[in-house]
Length: 315
Image (spheres, helix red, strand yellow):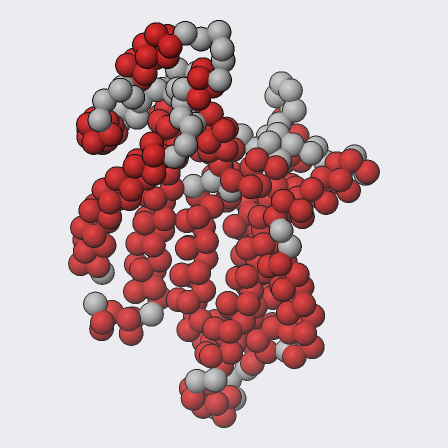
């Protein structure tokens, strides 16, 4: 197992370098830039634009800018935001707790829903018909539309929950924080649970089709014990892989949900920085997202090896 971890880590380093190079080039070659706001202002003189360009280092060749950024980034110096002059690392770190809070609650809720639904869908035809329709609806619902509907009903019409933000002005306490968390967590959890329940249903049916299931039944093993203690563990490697891959994408910020609900996570920071062409913050966000995806992929590989010893033979 440690050989797998070492090999994956060795592969991740050059991969991250390649990703950083491509992302840096694409961001700087895209139309516009951090000075676009000033360029559109007729009161800003050309010499002022040139002075800002030199101050930001944008007058240097792109390759020199990349090497300078990379050397500083690996030292923990992520630069300064072009929008407000604050350190990029500080801006990212202050947003991460909100994203982890939202994603953690949404993933926990999705698992609590997806596991029993997936298991019972694989064994009970009547339940499967109902859950199949609900799962397709959950997967098909556009996140922004579903979120807007929840806001209109529970925040607008009924007034039960706040429509946006992480807390009310001032410190509203635990109840206030939880009330702000409900709607965005539901939006994420429904989409996740819908897909995960389908994956688990399929994996469970494959497990139940194995010969050992018939042998266990013939020996008088109860259906409940067979289902939860034997079939489910066999289906877990596939399910865990899907869960961790989806979680890796959310760990870098649930961009649409956070923006829709005004949730102050790194996903909403991305949309704000994208509108302002804040290269330093955008690069930090994209690199954090890349590291999260690679880390969760490694975690998935390790967990699959641990859950299913048969896969170790290929390693």
